[in-house]
Length: 255
Image (tube, rainbow, N blue to C red; front, side, top):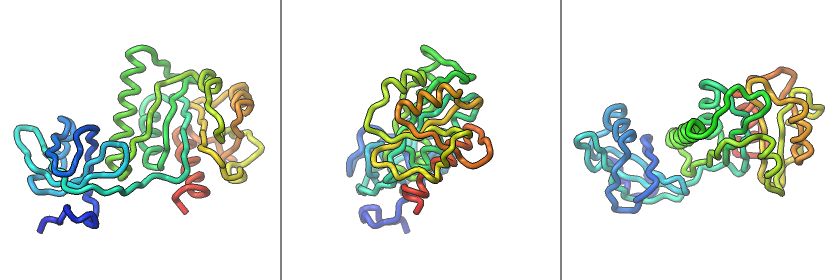
């Protein structure tokens, strides 16, 4: 028997798809070409199978597959749930752009860990340098990864992935009042010893080569607190995710 998706208490289906426009109860919603392929060819969904849809602004729609034909999958939205799965701790990850799959991995996992926004920054030791169309394509790729991570982990709000910016420019333009942490393996203070933030929090992480002493100094002058993560030097993707896990365990929704 198919679940009664008109009942908002029905458990959320496992298959989730992002649809930025046209969501409404009773509407027939065509999935994108990529989502249609994933639904029909990878997940092998058929007419009548339950799914959920979200547009990234909050809440989700429950629905069923209404039609699968010629490569197109259409979902009929049948109910709305205002369920949210956001962390009460608002963190913006200011991430030094890393090379290869490291940046992709960091973005996917940061979204799973509840990050509020991501600001990719170029630092003095950044190996990757992007400009113009290359930067636009990479940013679009990162935004698509954030959406896919939301589909996987159940989040109904898509974190913003900002355009790439020079670290010096971000520090100069940084909005206040905000709390902030810059990870530094030589810092005198442990991240576990920092007080709970009273405002949204910026978390700054260096790229593969880390941040320079001058960059850490400028960050602290801009109001961020330097903190270390134990006695070992962590890879950039490890540092970002370990720090987010610690912050959520202390002040977020891991408690």
